[in-house]
Image 1 (cartoon, rainbow, N blue to C red):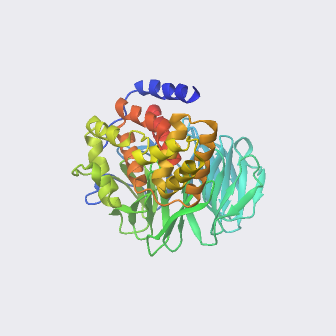
Image 2: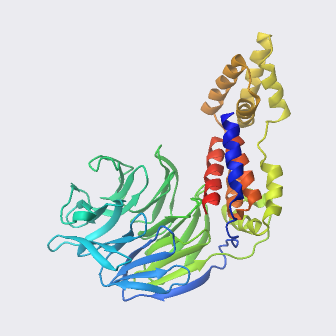
Length: 468
């Protein structure tokens, strides 16, 4: 009953307006949408929470409209790094001092300075506190906005970058990546490894780090399991950003190149020769627009889309081909959804697995033992069928216990599900289509997909469609 109620709630929410359709993404012909030159140098930038504004640090702080690159206003404040507050109403800046500005009034509301020392990184712990790092003195301060002259806590680490999530704060400091709990500023938990990490990006489920020698590493948050790593550049990584849905990672480096990576597979789907000099930041305005800046004062945005032949089968192909096919399928809207409805409808397991699951109810002990063995032999197909039986068929208490026993064995010796990558890309395609029909299929998958990962991905995608 509880699952059915959740299902009705998800379906009832599908009446929200559709999100805009997006163009297909391609590695071959990224189109530069706009370019803006700002001063002689840029230290970095930050995207506002609504993704409509970009604050760029340099000789002064310049706030741009991300849709066309036009200047909204400037703040007479030199800075190496900037960060929007969680609600976008304030801006923190790191330079010769740590400063907080009220953007509507264009007024400074607090500052903290240390003699002959520069702040190199800044971020918001919450709406009332900022975290500011001093690289030269290996010091990171927590500063209350109401009284910025008074540091409430000091950590003896040299901070290069800050990412704040609801459950944790993540720092790139002293060449490592650390997590700190918001409830206790002093609780420095751990570093992932000793490599010299200087840039980080995170979603609620994933963490990415970039090193001084061009490596990119992606981990699963919570388990700290490494998902993949690659040597993307011969020089330092200067910017990292996950796409709004977490499916892709954009990164740039001293060589001026922007690479786009599919997070699930670790495949490079596009590479842009963005600048002839150092690239200092990367961000996503939306699911198809990437913004980057150069150290010599240039900011630019690319629409990395182009028409591609649509093919559902190509969702199982290598990363670049699958990426292009996904965006082409988005253009076909509900025609694609109708095909995916047939392919993704939560399976009940094949006939053989269903037969052996039924045999677990047999009064004959030998038949039950044989059924257990055959289900284990089926590998991931047996696992999928068992999950569906537990979810939808309400087996008896004894049969449920036997199914759980087999499931534990299968999980312990799991072989690869060849359809897992296809399903994940299909869920990303449905989110980008965003129609009522697509949202209904996402709701179905969130309730009854055979994989816990698929259910979580479908539910997250459904929520973003509903709220977007």
